[in-house]
Each structure stands twice: as structure tokens, then as C-alpha cells.
Image 1: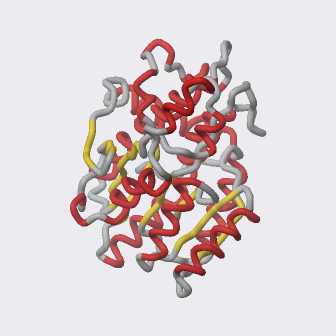
Image 2: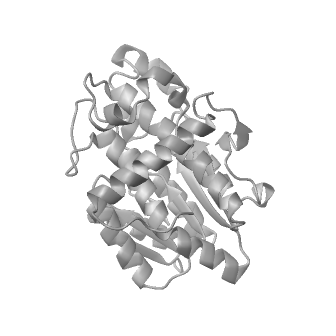
Length: 293
């Protein structure tokens, strides 16, 4: 399953997975673009099985609805790629009244992963093939200072800065992976979760990042940017490579294990974020808390 696969790295990842014979599930907000991606994949790989679903990752109800629809099909699930990401220059709020970048890049992925996790554990047990979850992050997670990383301010920032919000959401995705990896190991589940920094890639997010690379520098910087296929290569490596069988809770860049920030490695901060997120989501969805990992 690869969300955020209607353009850029996600679309390229879906293409590579389909070529390798993987059934690809694409949850997307824009079904027209998703259909175009599907058409492109099937032109190249006529036997590819590509399933499209509608989802708005910034909406907890939409994520929940998608998960119910997918799980109702009874399909196995070996790979989950949390790829979708937004950058918002101006302060915007989701329908759940949560800052849009955090809602989309972190909360939506958290809920989706939680809701399909038992299916992944079950698939791994039945097939003997290890399940893999990949969260996409960014090297700019390291820009976040400890004092600025406050859960209530992430939901409703007082002084909004688009680049800071993006960096904070990407730090949260690493913490999510680290804590989930610890919990999966404690359960002896045959599912791993790792984080990928794809590099600075020529995608729509970079085009939107006016405060991130100034217009005057963009032409020079663009010579150093990775192509979309180069950007997708580490995601595909984390999803498919036998070399990292059993590896979990790690951060990868350029198809190699790499280092993330001290804050991203802080176990107590990750635990705290996990608990706060879980409480928020289940409060918002007004449902009893699902089973702990």
C-alpha cells in the first residue's frame, strides 16, 4: 500500500513495486490523478494489479473510512509506505481543526498505520514474509529545537512558519517509527518499520517551498537536487531489499543507514508523543481505545 502515489516519489515507488509483481493499493485524494498513475503503471506492466481508493489524510474520518473499506476486502498486506506529504506556506486547519501540515504528514499516517497494523501482523504470520512499514521523513527534521516541539502548539501554532511546521511533522514521523518499532519488537511481530529521507527531490513540495529555497538560489540548487527516480530508490530499497531483513527503527538515506537528530532518538519524547497522539485521535473519533500494541 502506497499513499501519496499520485505524483513524484510516491508515483515512482508505485511503478517500481508494480514492476516487481507487488499488488499496489493507492489511497489518494485526487482519484483522477490516481487513475492516470494506474494507467501509466499498466502500460508498462500490463499484468499489474492496482487498486484505487479515495482518502483525505488530513481528515481522521476519511482515513478511518478508507481503512474500513480496504480491510473489508480481506486482502493481505505486506508493505505500507507512508509517503504523502504537504507543505503549507500559510496557516491552514484541517476539518478536525488541526494545523494542516501536522494533520496530513503525521496524524493521518499514525491512524492509518494503527488501523491496518493487525492485518500486517496477520499477513506476515500466514505468509512467512516479513511485513515492512516505511515512513518518509526529511533531513530538515534536525532543524527542530527541543523547546519548540510541544504537542499542543503543533496542533494549533501561535506563530506559524511553514518550513518549521514541515520539519516538525517530519520529526514526528521518525518518533512514530522509533516507538512503533520498540512495540513491535516487544510483541515479536514479524513487521518492521523504518524511516527514509529521500533527499531533496524535484517534486511539487519543493516548488511550494518558497521559504525553503529562495527563487534566486533555486536554479543553482536545482542542479544538486535528485531526480524523482533517485529519490524513490531508498524507499524501494527499504520496502524490498533482502539486505535489511529484520532491521527496524532505523533511518535511511541514499540506501544506507544514517543518523537522525538527538531529539528524534529520544525514547521518552517518542513515547510521550505516541500517547498524546493516540489519546487525541480516539477522543476526536469518539471511539473506545483500540488494543495496545
